[in-house]
Image 1 (cartoon, rainbow, N blue to C red):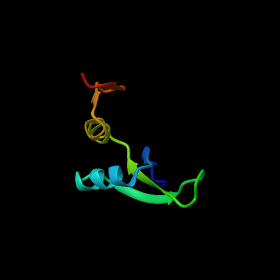
Image 2: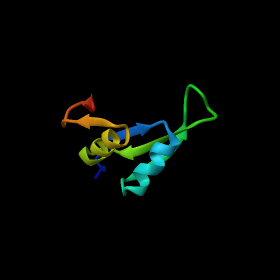
Image 3: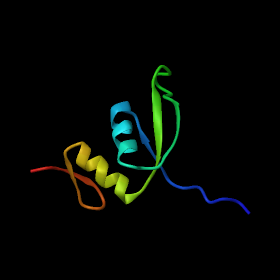
Length: 71
């Protein structure tokens, strides 16, 4: 039996990744940034809760499908 792959969200900013980890989101692994190998990319399990927290941390409004600037 093969395990079904879960969707992954890539985070490029370390401080944002640390905030998401503190909020309890599922951190999967890191990998080198292809464009600049001295940086890491942080992989998280993609969920609606992750999207909501990303919107909140980046001062955006999340309506379930896309981000909007907060008013």
